[in-house]
Length: 301
Image (cartoon, rainbow, N blue to C red; front, side, top):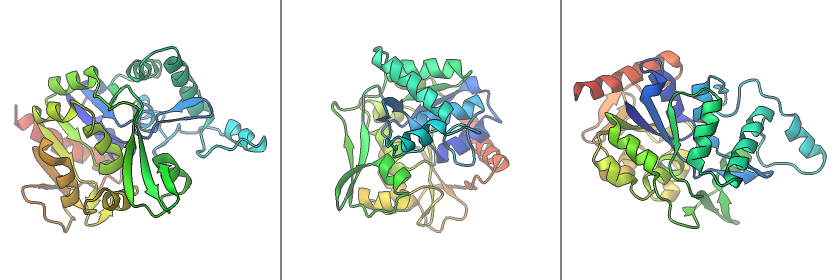
């Protein structure tokens, strides 16, 4: 069994390849929840939903969010009646948010709600939130703090930022379920998700780094040179105080990593790293990278 730490774009592309090699029941994914928010009375967990939809076979893999072929009638009607949303949410996607919100209002934890939704969708992998308490990533702008979802989805990252801050009523603690899965895994893969907004919040959960230090951990850089494979990682890394490249990513992850993977085209030299083709432009490329990683893991047995 393997466990992956995931955000909502880079790592799901790797998961698409790993699913060609391992059965879903052998895969655990611990997912970032620092981009969660309540919108129109419903609970949006964008990264969790992307992973769930991938395993359910309904993910829109053109956008890497939402449900393939979804309609947006409710979203358009809200605009018509003067209640526009900052994020365009599909109708079936909204149904998941409604269900999650209701489960949370009934007193269920986010872990319990995620498992319940996954079960209904037929997901056989174990998909877990990093913690069960609310936490949010905000970026600092000239006009004040802004939720990451507003920065990236509404403004497409076209806002100058000077800092990153995590907001939480109580310090986030890694769930028992997440820690248990790490301890039972043959290895943990930190996927090529955004180091600041996707992986950073997971590593900041109390108990997470201690568990990872006892595991065999592979981390994959999301950068080729100073260019992120996807998303706004470069600006966010600079605002976080790290160089926007593979070396900055390696430094940010600290001592929880046993093996660091860079792309073969990356001009940055990180001492001790392994070079693989990490450009997952399609299923075959994702599967090839998955085979490479799993061969390393199996070679340790």
